[in-house]
Length: 356
Image (cartoon, rainbow, N blue to C red; front, side, top):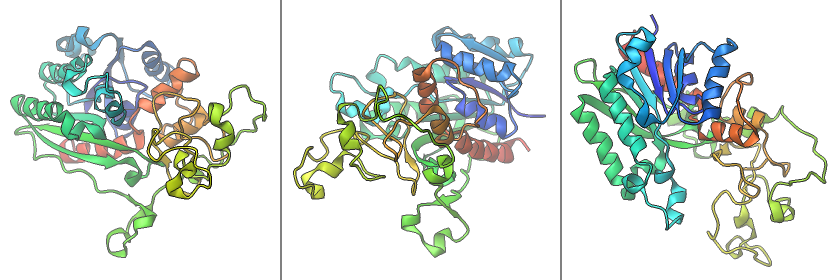
């Protein structure tokens, strides 16, 4: 019998899909955003995926987790999975001086309600995901809360920051992953070892049984689009002509004095890293952002916007996975997701260690 999972902050279903592919049943999922909820329902109703028997579109503060066993007909929940929304812990928040960080942010209730769900459901295992910045020193209070709540509720935790590219995802996307195991149910979780390596740092001793990172060329090279030069909204916005000069794999820093540009246009580290960022077919993508932008990449190496079909590949969603909403809604769902391929490997390790 497959382990039973409750998913919170489900979004477009990246975590759910990873667990489903590893042999779990997602019996209940919840998110507050209607396009995401419709995506979860869409892929279930059309029979593409078997997860999400119940989808509740609601503010997490209003979700009655105690009623989930009765509503689903499942007496014991095996796993709670989810990633509380992360803007307060993101790297970009360091640049927004008018915004508060971590637990001082107005949306800190999302973290507290993850632990409310954990307490009310009392699962054997939990999977918690957030941005790399969750472990940064300015966010120490949130990190400490995770450890304190886990201990108080009776869980041993294991955590690490993982680069998705090290697990076969064609994207250098760093995420904080924590797995908690109910005390007495089993030993603390042991993370699966990476399967891929950075070819620029190859070591025969360390990597001879591993594969090199998956590149963008391998992931999306067969997807291409012929677009007219006079397309209404061109990649790069008012800097579209500069974007055409950026070599694949580079960004606005190409036009700085430090990089030897003859007539420098930008100051060193004066913009976000993703400004005029262009993919290289020879390496993985950089992190796909949740917000679509005219001048923030990554852009295709052919100087155009990426398409939804391409960012789905980069995030390792199946080609037939359907997304609800308009273009920006779909982009947000994919950009916010945890790559299913990464989740599947961690979920498989959880299943092997505790549910076989």
